[in-house]
Image (tube, rainbow, N blue to C red; front, side, top):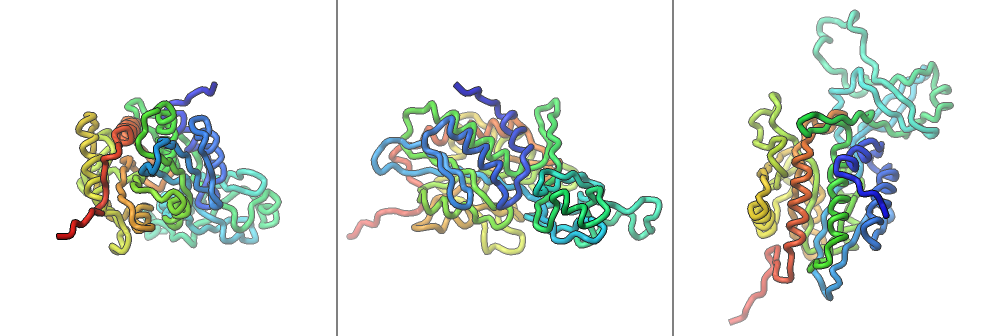
Length: 372
């Protein structure tokens, strides 16, 4: 008999793991181990997508897929100079403005090597340098060595990944702060859903929970899993910027503690070539579920955010899609902050939605045309 974990225990475990895009292996191991406690149908594909299936047992059952990505933003070492200082490129959209003076974890071949991002001594700053951020190519990581050879002896080589240092802490008001909330919070929700679904013997739809890979790098890592599952409905879980801080005040109404944010539109800020416009019927069903279950929810419009459903929607014969987001402050930094209340309300929304699916549920625009 396994010891079940609370939502916050899962989240603390998962955010303590270092796993940038394509290096998700330790999260894959964690998710597959815990999924296996709740389902006999768990598999991992070639690139690491971890699929947990709860079959309805009904012939020709429709399929709903709920997914969230396992990778986090970070860095990769592109050069080591003769004195052993490390220079980096980003993996995903890590916020380089927060780096000077920050502690990082270098994932060396012999284990984690602690490093700090160097910053010019305040006493020697020129007037024009005060209040400005150095460009990425000028940033360096100091791991306490004096030569490239010494760095390599410690297992630090070009191509090693670098992560924000984990420092998870709880607030008295139910908020939590740390690195990799994006998107280990979704992985946490998937595990809690698996726990609940393992006790449900009355599913009318086949349910697939997918912990996917490489979202921060290319947003398409889930596609091999989608092509295997061929879902009728796809619901993506991710974070979204909370705009209840002075620097984002009034950009949108999304805040902490007001429930999950249901996406009405998102797309990358450099154009509308890829984004999410959710299926109308699916959107209405999620909203109806919130209203019936007395779940507070928010309406999200997020320009500058893009999620996997932007590509999933066009798979095979098309997929009905929707996104649910967890409001999060300070995204893509080591102090991402969210509300456990919002996380637990998202769990309730998803489980209530899945439990309410029956054979009569129809999503998407496909319809029969009756000839005259």
